[in-house]
Amino acid sequence: MSTFDPIQSFANLRHEFGEHGGVNMSVEASTTFTVINPTTMPEIFQGNLGPDVGGCYLYGRHFNPTVYVLGRQIAAYEGAHAGYCTASGLSAIAATVMQLCDTGDHVVASRTVYGGTFALLHDYLPAKTAVTTSFVDVSDLAAVERAFTPRTRVLYCESVSNPTLRVADIPKLADIAHRHGAMLVVDNTFTPLIIAPIQHGADVVVHSLTKFMNGASDHIAGAVCGTTEFVMRLMDLHMGSLMLLGPTMDPQVAFDISLRLPHLGLRMAEHSRRASYIASRLDELGLPVIYPGLATHPDHGLLARLVHPDFGHGGILALDLGTRERAFEFMGLLQNEHQFGLMAVSLGFSETLMSCSAASTSSEMSEQDLEEAGIRPGLVRMSIGYTGALEQRWMQLRSVLEKMGPVR
Ligand SMILES: *Cc1c(COP(=O)(O)O)cnc(C)c1O
Image (cartoon, rainbow, N blue to C red; front, top):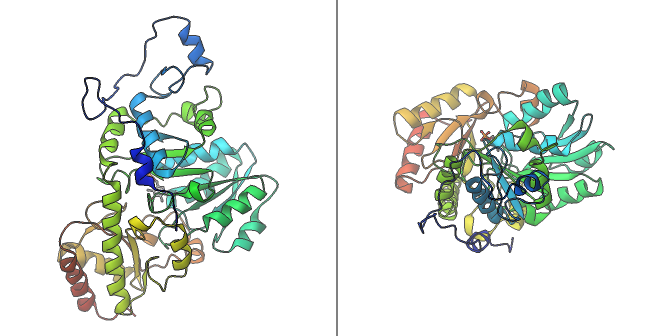
């Protein structure tokens, strides 16, 4: 069990008032910033002055004050020294990997990662940058160890994998990475507040804020958390991936997301409570449900050592319907006849979202890669929402299961 308290860490931040004393911060909707003294400008360009040194800002693709506040808030939840936000989760991931790897360097990555991350590491980076990746089952620590080469700079995984919901043993993976002089980068999109990877030894945490963090499914956004030195490197005028590739978050978006962060803890606890209830009911019926909070899940014990006790075991579960056809029928009935949830990719919304992973978010993977990653054709991933009465939701789900007959 983790003793780090993300809620207290967030509360310890200085409150950001609006320009006129408003209870919410102001949106700094400016692309450029003036200086009073002309000698200030070269100092900012040389990195001697900045947001934390003199409160100096330069240009909107560099740091923006509103986005900077959001970055600090995300970093507080992760227990990181610093953080900054990006236009998407994938740009946070790409900028991080490209910052840590030079041409010809090597990545060891979990073979069950988000489809876009898989394509970035498997197809795009080798072709564009000669950065290559070995994909391994990160639950097999010996296989992780064997995959390292003298050029390995990054060990990459998701705290809880998508969609197979295996839990990464972050302390052990951090040990392996550090022994080889590499950095452990963890995508914590599925488990904000539940797991704080940096507290368990990870060097960098990346997020798709698009999901639970923002929670309203209205913005695409991302974040990187790590040391202050790393965040400054990302924004370096000559070699910074954020500065030079330019995945800039709009300050208005940063403001919107900042409004939803104070109730992240309430939302995560309720997503988890409901997912746990539904997973337990499915398990009692003997159905092939995957949920890391179930005692039967292979990583249940590991997860118990990593989580903060207040936020449960996550809002995502997966149910294997056997075939793609049955998965489609199941989701169609749930959405169109019972209003249980919505057939849509993504997660962390107020409503339940359902998708068949092999036919959607993991379709970047070949059939063999899918099989090796344990992503079965009929696996339906559900991000459990918090609207409606829980017992009523369970009745809707049970009706569809009864209508469809035995799963196997
Ligand atoms: C959605 C997602 C991403 C990509 O994030 P975007 O905001 O869509 O760019 C990366 N990792 C995980 C685990 C995700 O669920």
